[in-house]
Amino acid sequence: MIKLNGVTFCYGNKDGGAGNETGVKNIGLFVEAGQCVVLCGRF
Image (cartoon, rainbow, N blue to C red):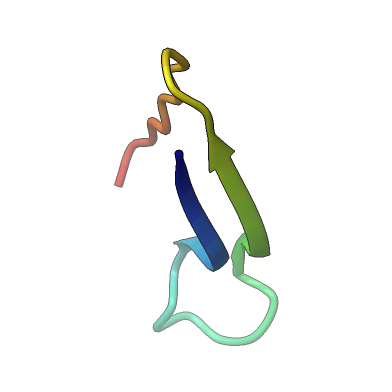
């Protein structure tokens, strides 16, 4: 099993100012044997 705790994914214009950066913060991922988790995005 793979555990990822306290993971933050952010996207947006970090140089543009407040309110432009969005994302998912402080999540936990738990992957059991035989499972597949795909995280995709465009940067």
